[in-house]
Figure (cartoon, helix red, strand yellow):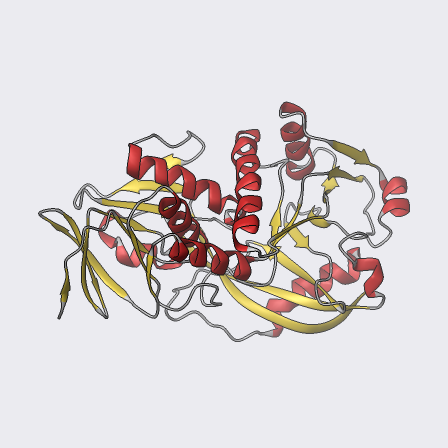
Length: 374
């Protein structure tokens, strides 16, 4: 096996959302970066695909996330400017559910604590403003201005391309088998040889536990299915008319949806509720049971959405027990840092996480308390 001696500062393993955006931010700081990707940036084998991902600022999970997502917003716009790609569309966002439920109360807490523009809508106001939704008795909605959707494949590809333009070396279609300590830092063993670097950053998503098995990180990989249902009047579901939404059901579960991006369908999804899986043997076939919850939700809660499932795709969530992200150091290989996991809500944070990990690797800065640090 060949050996590639190098004065590389950081070797990145995985060019999904976290890896590609970290590569961009590191390269922008002048770090010498080499990045390995098993497939190609923007692929559909992991977690950063499916045409759209929700961007939201009034974060129901915790008000502490708001400063991070606000910084991410700035960085997404910067990446758009640098790359010329259209990545973020603001539509506003609706949080729909019981007034005292986890979603609505959490969105209100984040909006009020961080002085974010928002407004409450009762069932009557919703029927006037957004007649596509049918509300249950006792449901209300919160509209937040600073929400919309990102285009994940474009975003990952744009970040990887910008990193490369800034001097990063991208090794695509290259599988990393292990990372070992060396006298000068780390050695990354791959299907295309050995590569040396001062530090390594593992951003492998669902494959993280396989590369860092000895750390026993509390990561669970979950199979998720998203579907695209045909609509009867696409104009009513255009981004200007139909904001992104999350809805908490009467059973405390979550459904989410987007305006049309193709002029004939809208994308809907079930948040969590998927089965545990292995990223190398995941079932990528779509079954009736996969799409039934989405069809049932559309039938009961949306007007003008048919049961015609035009498309459906499989992706993966890599979850921690409390759904926070992880920045972990590998004590057995001191030069290795692990950045994971999106837990089904992390894509929007990718550029700010890349910025934070850049500070941690180059300046030894601590990460915010909302992120697990180990």
